[in-house]
Amino acid sequence: MRISERLAAKQTFSFEIFPPKGDLPIDQALAVAGALAADKPDWISVTFSAGGSGNSANTLAVAGELLKRCAIEPLAHLTCMGSERADIDAYLAALAAAGISNVLALRGDRIPGREVADFAYASNLIAYIKHVAPEFCIGAACYPEGHVECEDFELSMRHLYAKQQAGADFFVTQLFFDNELFYTFREACTRHRIKIPIVAGIMPFTSAKQIQRMAFTCGATIPAAVIKRIVSAGDDPADQARAGLEYALEQIADLAANGVDGIHIYTMNRHEIGDAAYDALLACGYLED
Image 1 (cartoon, rainbow, N blue to C red):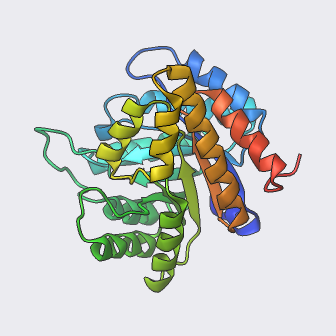
Image 2 (cartoon, rainbow, N blue to C red):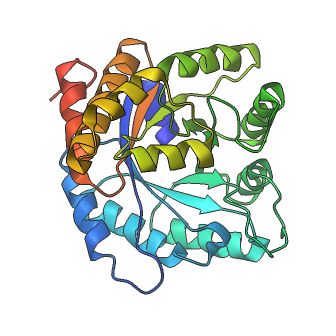
């Protein structure tokens, strides 16, 4: 089923997992996927290496097994930075052959020393997929605080509108830690005539070091409430991870109460994070058992 159809019918709940890189076996990723499938998500997204060189075959393998073994709709990531049209054509053909009809079209990280090939922006990739393979449902990334490489928020919003006009069917946000910034972003989307569904992406912080890295790489604001949780947790790694999960569950409950189109959990391949999110959404009535 196309994810856009599910979003049109209900508030959704989904997960992200990542496959191994290179020639490593996919068994661990499949075990995580199988455990998460018990939580009955609407879909599970499977990540993809920038440039298509690191784990694209494993992305396809894990996504295919999700559909075959677990009867869970996969959302296969696809990055275009460093990719040529022939690479994209081959990957789309392989997805279609596996019965996969949903793709998350991303630019991907810039690759040092590698020139841009046929696609400079995600909107270029989205338009290309829409042209050559219109049967695919296309998701795209959005950034509640603006893209980290774009200092002008209004320009970032115009880029988002360009993705919609190129053919994106829905958006999934980058991680954020301040729900109020997300709600402000939703209002900005309305002003910029963005009408497709926006799924909120949530990643629990696991340590002080990890959240600092996320803030640097993603440009996510760390609110005072998070800093207080980290300080209260002290130096114990388990306490820091517990504080991060508790904060994320509070975020999720608040999003559910404020009419979000969908909630997407960045699990970091830890099924217990997905299980906790599922239980929290059952408790607040967002999901039905």
